[in-house]
Image (cartoon, rainbow, N blue to C red; front, top):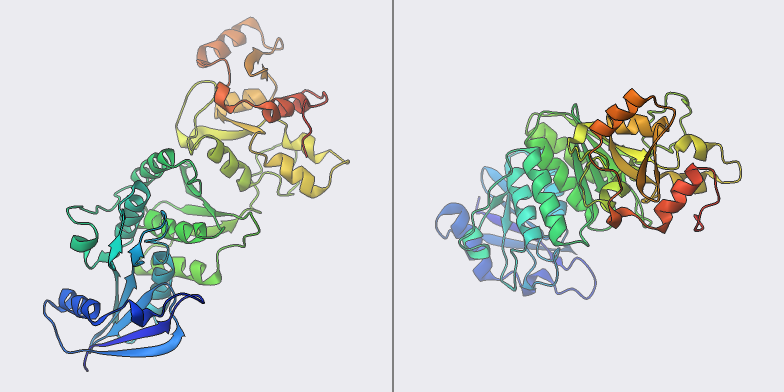
Length: 399
């Protein structure tokens, strides 16, 4: 058969130009030449439906080729050039196993003006490369730039945190190494849900270790769509791995041995919020240890105290238990000492309990190289949580 493009002609939204106004013969010709090494005769079949994920399809005798088009024209923000890719990739992953022919996926740079190689876009391109996406015309879209895939999850974490440091408003996803597992804390609001899905592909591609995805739902958002969850499973099938467990923020981190009640107060959103506060870094506030798997999110105003508050609704209890200022990062040793109230803080300064004997006090001093919470993390809300921990009226109202 003659190579045939199938294209939905209508724009994704009302008042958006129809696809045939910017998807010209010159671009179709270029795609054909890049795919087959020469210009071959082809046809285009337009359909009066809305385009989704800026995705077009090309059918030949022996294959289906999915081509995701970048945005065209002036680049207007960090997501503008790349926001449709995860949607298109999800469609491809969900359809390819039903296709009667071999299927492949490409990304194509449309004509554009502006900088399409910001630090965030570089991170995004590398995630795509890690997930196996082929750039059809990188020589045009990223001239002189070599797009390298990530080799390890640690590489992804490092790049994500560096990118986050360069853009303080970019606080969407976090990855932590919990020893036996990797944890992904992924926002599901707006475009973040697509980034979360793509991050699952990339992390799964470079590790055999189990992964837990915690969906952080807020701002009226919903969980990942069934199609996105299906695409994650289909991606795992395509690389012969099945290491992602998709969870939501009702998952219970219950490490309180004295209380086995399951009420969702030990919630992944608390960990996410603390990661958000510290820029994605897990580091013990008292010894500086940065080994993810031994650093824990410690509540200041403890969950078992919050549970006993009969004057609060469950929603109010949950708000206190997950509050961004109701926690600090502590290693396992310091966390246990803190929970047992053998160490505490006063106005951010370390206090060692007199319930310890002199020998034990010396041990605590030896393993504690930092004696005060870093000033940039202290505010009136945090101090109010310390007040509540001590059983005295908080200095500010906590709702």
